[in-house]
Length: 304
Image (cartoon, rainbow, N blue to C red; front, side, top):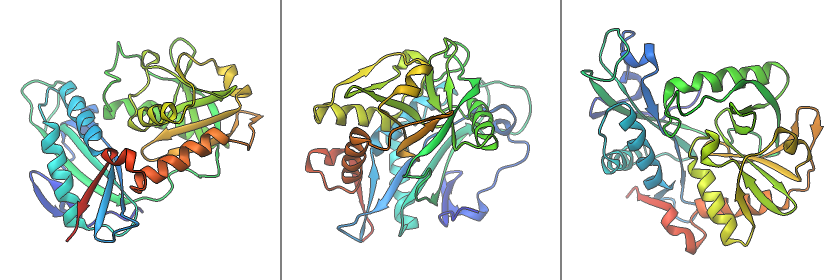
């Protein structure tokens, strides 16, 4: 079982994690009418009395937008204020992950978003490497990513993650670490909970937003970082066959950070990954607040 942080935010107050419980009749549990965020934090390597959160403002803004799909007005600044207080109360001593969640909290049946109570909670857990930093194997999933015309894919809607769950389990039970889903047009979309990048001829390539991907915060950070490093980038559709002949493939996300892909189906990929490693090293330095030019990406919380 994960090591959960001892304090949660639940029903507008901070309570012991063990006491933050919902009813079995909670509306969101039955209909997937929730939306979540996820962000990482670490103790500052240079200052033991400080916690660093990566791109806190962007995570709060995205969750606020996700809440709008549930007809719930939850300002980003309120989310940020609660997260900061949450960190201060827990005082984590190791790398951790924060999960804020908005949901229809009423008890009862009938799928709807009108005339129903909504709420917001936060919990956290200790989290090291979500995927192996040495690289993962991926299979092409038999499950396809949903379309934005049937689900609001610009939000992290909880119900949408049934597809990710099916794809992840299919991959693991068939001997792989992770799944890569195609979209309805047969183009590469994303992994079970990560965006996908490939490198071909020195150019960094990733599917654009029109490919029904999640608007990943780590993805956007990587694109900006690559451009600042002089790496050519392009957002365009990616064919399945390109995965097999790419010079490098990696996954990105809050939990996964930058994780190289070592095999796709039965195609072994090169272990020489200069662009992946360059981006990963730079991103690590930024999250540890060692890059002055990117200090606005890191939110420091004093525990004193």
